[in-house]
Amino acid sequence: LEVMNLLFYTSYRLVKENVCEYNIKEAISIAEKTKSIGNFDYETEKIELKRNLNDSFEKEIVAFLNTHDGVIYIGIEDNGEICGIVELDETMKKISDIISTGIMPNPQELVSVSAKYEEGKFIIEVQVKKG
Image (cartoon, rainbow, N blue to C red; front, side):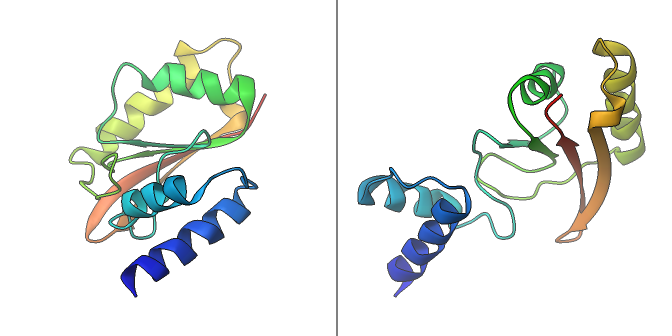
């Protein structure tokens, strides 16, 4: 029954993402990765999960700006486990500084940042529109 639920969820995600070329082995693999993620999607070309803010953050924003819309979640492990942000205000300030001064031309109109409270922990959601 658990495998059936995982396959159903994976099929739903594949249809939602408009990806139909996956075979059953890939679907099971995705389902296993998704099993512990809860409300958060697994990493895809449009979703990036990050434990904390690091040096690759700016490059990931630029990549989404240059290719397609995407979302970066900070405070979530690659496996979907929520670890949270310890210094929320400081991290939000660093993100704002990176967006306003680290990327040219300035993409502020295309990037939105918000804090969310999930499972008793704060996470940060950064939505990036293709520019």
